[in-house]
Length: 119
Image (cartoon, rainbow, N blue to C red):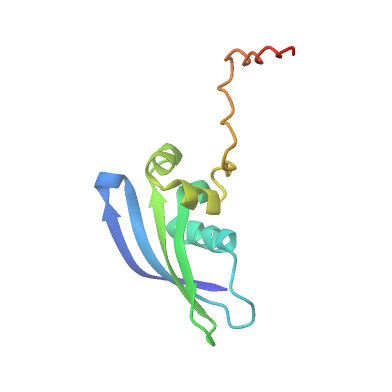
């Protein structure tokens, strides 16, 4: 797998650098998002937990995948600015099931169950 950066833009307002990249994977299937994050982190010399792959698109019949990635200045900036589903896709956040109540913060008292009704 060979990763090549096609374009780089600094975005100081959102505390990140935005990259457009291309991955050549002639002898293998489309690489995973995690593998691309690892290769990009080596190229831009940033920790993997600050690299977020926004999108990847493999053209049908070719061994080339193009995509967009963001490299934040800190992990906190990434978690505050990036959309939740993108963080889940990149493994930086756990998915919360629909209808499930969020876990109470640490140190919070446990909820008291409602009393049972007697008929």
